[in-house]
Amino acid sequence: MNHAFLDAHATLDSPLHRLDARLKTVFALCFVVVVVSTPAQAYCAFAGYTVLLLSALVLSRLPVGFVLKRLALVLPFVGAAAIFIPFLPSETVGGGYSLGWGGLAVSRSGMLVFWNILVKALLGAFSVLLLTSTTPFPQLLLGMARLRVPRVLIMITSFAYRYIFVLVDEAQRMARARDSRCYSHRWLWQAPVIGQMIAMLFLRSYERAERVYLAMLARGFDGSLPAEKPGTLAARDCVCACGVSVVVVALRLCAL
Amino acid sequence: MTADAVAIQVTGLSYSYPDGSKALQEVSFQVKRGERVGFVGANGAGKSTLLLHLNGILQGKGVTIVGMAVTKANLKSVRQKVGLVFQNPDDQLFCPTVFEDIAFGLRNLRIPEDEVGRRVRESLRTVGLEGFEKRSAFHLSVGQKKRIALATVLAMQCDILVLDEPTSNLDPRGRREIAALLEQLGGTQVIATHDLALVRKLCSRVIVLREGGIVADGEPRTILNDEAFLRAHDLS
Image (cartoon, rainbow over all chains, first blue to last red):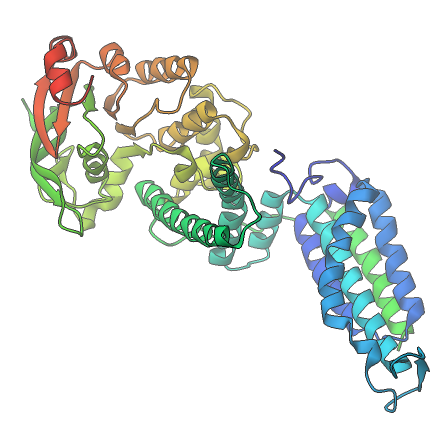
């Protein structure tokens, strides 16, 4: 089983992989804010953002199929949120298109809202995806630490990353043990087993957390953590980040 | 014997779990500096509970480490002296990388970062896993994980190593490697295990626990060759 499903391609080598994790993190966050703040009708700006991310994708040498698949994961969430929006009453703005059956009509303003959600979600996810797939997780955490993100938050994130594999493994082992005793997923009376497994998984995780904590105590953990030293940024990285930022800001400004 | 030559002194130690069941009852023993002692006993005999007392995770009356009573006030010094290696390396290795895991204890001791790096490399070399710094502990084999877990306390340069089941879940080769490693490390070692072969090979002394009490304390040669005794205490 491949456990590296979170940052599978993070160890490739490319200009994007080599960029400082701090810069990438800050940039991805700012980029999301800028994209979200762009008015929905600023189609050129969105085209510009897309081109920017696509060129980053090319630079990063990530497999395109992998990125598309990951991006597709966003669609159900966006869809669930946005599916009804185009059918909102058309009186408010712009007028509508009649679909001719059952009085159902698509309104132009509704379409615009739908487009707004879709494009921003996709671009946001795309930029974060580029960040996480070009930065190994430990680097990402280190970057966060150097950005003075509270250590407790970083520890929680790092525990989540470390133990999600253990949890997945444990769940798989339980499922295997269950299936080997002729469990089929077909009958309703078998459904409680799923609930029991989830409860069991929770208990095991809880107990493991306690053992992990003991192991930390045993090595002198006293609840406080030494702060990470900031470390210097390479001039090359800064120049690169500044350049791309100028382009993004220009795109955003021309959409005003 | 001078006080200086005693690594661990346990006198009349008792412990009950919160539900009232007794895990340890009036346990007393002494471990000399440089001695390698094996603790054996059936499941639930109190081995792990006893080990947790040696590092101050559980604090009972009557435990002294190199002349220091194990109390809240000197926990830090006790944990600097006693390195505890847990049975399941997945409990002990909780960081994203091997380096972070080994550095964890050192950073808790506020050791400067360049020294941390040096000690991490050194302890990895000792356990034969040089160059594993950037690996993620989860992707390693059980044998490698066990050795990394050992490295996390070796880096802290503890005087006393306390190991809970160092050879459990290992294949014969893994067991042999751990045994060789422990032999080469030397120093004071306390090993709780079901692996009688390991005790025979490494330990100069064995203590047999049963239902929270000590039933035998002596040379492995005599105790572990007494088939009737072993059977009576669920060890064979």
